[in-house]
Amino acid sequence: MADPERMVDIPFEVQALDHGLRVDLFLIRKMRRMSRSLAARVVKSGAVRRATGEPIDKPSARVFEGEVVVMRRRPMDEGPTDHIHVPVLHEDEHMVLVSKPGDLVVHPTASAYHRTLVHIMRTRMGDDRLDLAHRIDKETSGLVIMSRNPAAATHLSLQFARRTVEKSYLAVVLGAPEWDERTIELPLRLVPDSLTKCLMEVGGAGAQPALTHVRVVARGDRTALVEARPKTGRQHQIRLHLAHIGHPILGDKLYFGSEDFFVAAIRGDYDEASLVGSVGHPRQALHAWQASFQHPDDGRTFTQAAPLPEDMVALARRMRIPVPEALCEATPPPG
Image 1 (cartoon, one colour):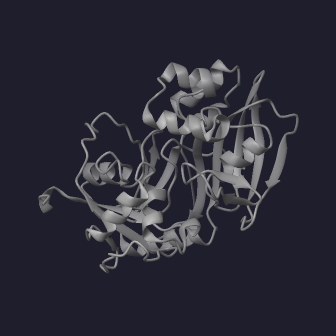
Image 2 (cartoon, one colour; image 1 turned 135 degrees about the vertical axis):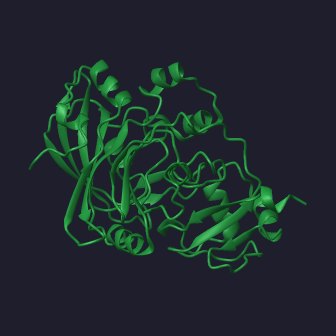
């Protein structure tokens, strides 16, 4: 039996797309390399529970949107984290706003526990109360809002749940659009037989409404820097919407590449040069740039921007895209 002191708890939040799934299917959706038979054995072993403390010992048990399922497992050898730079953009007694680097997961997963934004920031700030108010993808860089107490956590999480937070992303895309602004309104759903359990598609039975406003910030010869403002919060919404209209995000292994390419990249089959040659950038060139929301203390409108990271600035310049200086600063431009 494993030493209980050497075990870690991996929390998985049940999203809308996961609502009503059997717990074994939910686990293999969260852990792409786990087989269904292994997931069933893990559940039957008593290693899975709800965050409320209720054990889940039957693979057929259902999970529901909004709850957290916890899996106990041995920690992995993740390597050092001292070199990972996470700039703090704002800090007060209620919240901490940081700029997450690309290629860092925000919360514990099946393959990361210590090498996560939550663990790194809790350790560096000596504050175990720090918690995420929202999520962004591993490869997406940029602004992440963290709460420092239960009241702030509730206040911020409700704003994200009610879609009252105004979010803005920057992306380097293939092609120089002829239009300056465009609204993309296309329903999205999870591909039923997705190999990765995360591939989304436009339309189909059960597709949910999704709307994104897109504005061209600057154009290069064959690429552009665009701002995307999602008005709904579907999985991979910005990435798929842009790809569907013919302007995939450079570095997007799933929607600029393919599902097979994405799986091979996860396995480590491609080095950085191969990724650049195939999809234009080592990671998806998507950055959570700015957010406006109500401060959890007094409700005043609070706006914060995260400077465009060096790798995306270098990519844009290599593509001859003139990057506005305002995007490289932590203070959002007026207007």
